[in-house]
Length: 437
Image (cartoon, rainbow, N blue to C red; front, side, top):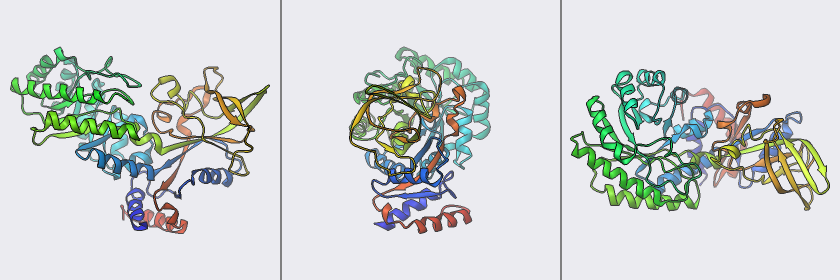
């Protein structure tokens, strides 16, 4: 129904970071046309840019709610701090996992209440703890006695989640247990130290690793968390009531499998925990597929049958995930002809290498990839570029990742039925209003 799409638009268009900005209705298979129109509007414009599809964000939140209705998402800001994206997540009811003062400031600037923030960094700078205390962010994680002492001194009203090392992190792209998480033998002494410091422990937190494919890891970690709930009770601590199951989720079939395991484990281990609040820290699940990156070809070299191309974003920018291993760069799904037809020219493809713009030979985006014959000023488009891409980029060699612009779009079942004139009128109404309509 178009009315359902309009209702979704009311939520999204009124979001902080989105309100007053141009949002383009994106019909099915309309992404290529949108990118081509952006390029065609200004033929001198050749800088890389993102397209953020707010309709994808909406559908992913709906999927999360259907699949894990008892688990409230606290989006991990580090994954992608784009203001419009954060605003949309806030409007859709997400909480936020922040790891620093700057991330807390970014979320509070959107008008989000501090009780929707978990300061999920087990090792915090003293000045950042003081800031959290000043603005009322009153829930954080810890995994050491030294952290307890810092919190006692600088934020004694802060409630705690004890971060434990997940029993199994196999199958994840990036494991976290080597850096964070209390070991089983450390749990009881830490609970007692927090009790002696007169700090309140609300519950348990864990993370099974980034982009995991071993969904049994969630069951093992939930079982370990239950043991800690029982240990705290035996030590005479106030009853715990928060379980933070961390992140590690990807969208698609893997999420369906993970959610089944999590729901089953929660029923098995926490069925008799009335008043339990279960939260999570998804990042990649919401951000990855919502962003598409368009890059311009700035150089070309032909060596026999090999085609070598230079684009204006690379390993030190949005493709930094090639180094961190937090994610991978997907092969470009389309090429946009500058000033011409938005289709790839010809059918023949060549073995191709794609380099980034810096002078470091390490800055190589793709090797041995089949691409059609391209020319300087053509465009390569990369899908699924929202997770740990621009957020981790740098300005090495003077190429500033933070300067890459983002164009907003909205797709949905009936997005092609929304007249562009309506969107312009809707945008004007939002600009004149004090809040969502």
